[in-house]
Amino acid sequence: MKIGIDLGGTKTEGILIDNDGIELKRDRIKTEKNYEGTIKGIVSIVKQFEKEFGNSSSIGIGMPGAISSDSALVKNANSIWLNGQPLKRDLQTALDRKINLENDANCFTLSEAVDGAGKGHAVVFGVIIGTGTGGGIVVDNKVLPGKNNIAGEWGHISLPNRTDNEKKYVKECYCGKNGCMETYISGPGFASVFNLKNNTDYDSHKILDELKNEKRTSKSSF
Image 1 (cartoon, one colour):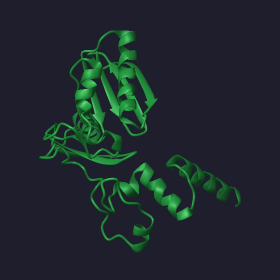
Image 2 (cartoon, one colour; image 1 turned 90 degrees about the vertical axis):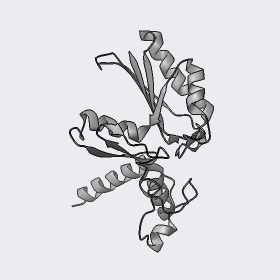
Image 3 (tube, helix red, strand yellow; image 1 turned 90 degrees about the horizontal axis):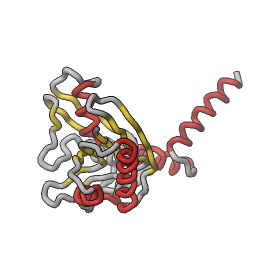
Image 4 (cartoon, one colour; image 1 turned 30 degrees about the vertical axis):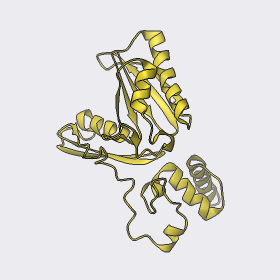
């Protein structure tokens, strides 16, 4: 059996599959926005799976950001409490075994390249837009990490030709730069822009709910 875990800024989701790829169990928990809590959440999912089904043969985790080749510490994670931390080492200690840890966008893109929308294509670029904004590049069914392990990262490319209005309502990115794509189109970025423009305090789900209600109201008035 194998365990796969998707570590996000909002939720942590795990899946247990057998050697034929058949799903045995799935679980989702809220991600605690601190380092110790994040590790405890991952460990709790693994232990619950193994309590019910026995020990797994491997554990793979998709995570925001990347592991630095120089320091083995996390970098470039929008879940900023992970940055500068030895996540792989600490998880291996907590779980008492070797784990595989990779950028979540790289994992997603590789999956699509192997047996998804990108199957049969030599080069596949995958995009994740959620709590953060990330991307991955796969060439000939192999992740292209680049020298700094962030070759597919596009969330911190600056939006070109920003208007004064676009600059006014967008906060500085956690990376310290201004104009990053992530600050416009990620869930929190989208919500932040909306709230600054409208003097509200909504999350992205609330904003979309309000939009749907407005559309229904408009239709009913005719």
